Image (cartoon, rainbow, N blue to C red):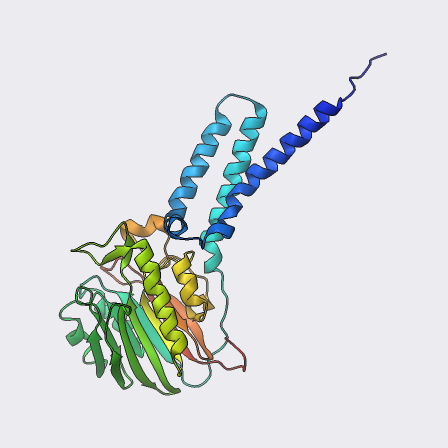
Length: 325
């Protein structure tokens, strides 16, 4: 008769402790969602998240494949899978459609794009047939290129990163760039009523301000986004905020802006707007945000030849249903 070994209390406690440790290891990556608004370090992690997650998963795979204890290899695999899931949710979650509601009336088709001081994106931008175009990093001749199609133009913004607004509707400058306004406030007399257009290009968050580049430190970048959010809250007419905000949609700076606004580009499935050498960061950094009971329809990302950005285009206007935001 074959006997069996009794499980001792110590063995049971050891097994329970091992399971608890594995659960803790699996839960660790999900702390991101509790810590993501805690400050500068979290802001940097948000920007670099795709690369950081790829690195963590690679390390976890290596540890899981190296000969050793079964428990260690299992926990490494569990951690890698959990980190990958967190990365997918954090990066792609803000790309999931969150429709603001249908637009009533005529609507205004807006297009935002960073042209990288070049004229080559201009034909593609004109082909979009938007009613209002916001172009960041304006090239010297771009204003003339838009002249035939857009009778109203306002050019201003930061000295080393000019911004242009080209409109088929009357538009006038309310306020040009300042220490807490990285762009312009423009009043547009649209077919569904006047609205304030924030035509913005927030400097790129970097390790510190650069004398040559259009860059600020990460804390300064967040402060600018928060300042713009405060300005928007003080407006008494509908607001449409368009531009290269250099704010990834998984970051704290985006959330402080979108907290009081609706993301009109989420009318459809989103994706990165930063391309070229910055594509590995999977940054959706070009945005169209609306408030004041306005919604968005027919959102699309547009290819801009020669630019390191995709354009963002959407029709905005008063919401068709009362209460749509």
